[in-house]
Amino acid sequence: MALSELEILSDIADILAEDANVPVGSVRLSSRLDGDLGLDASMKANVIGTVRTRFQVGVSDEEASKFATVGDIAAYLQAAIG
Image 1: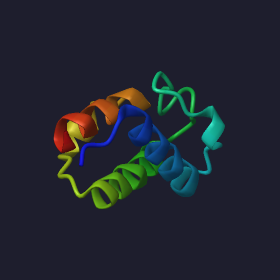
Image 2: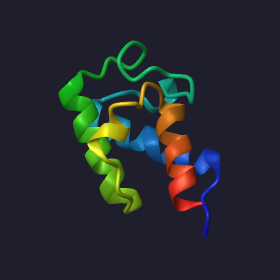
Image 3: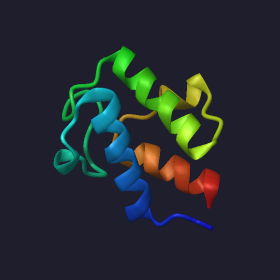
């Protein structure tokens, strides 16, 4: 069953809250991982690791390095899981 963009955003917000202490209410598709949410490289790696596990998708390190916003992650997941 395909997840909606809203469901994916909600799941990403939960991951960010758990792994990086980002308030769920501050997560938007346009939120920049480094600038708006304050993720450093280590936090971003943890978040991507959790995304890989929770959604059971392969995200290469090269692809993950291109994620600048929450929307980038959401778009990748929508394409990967339909």
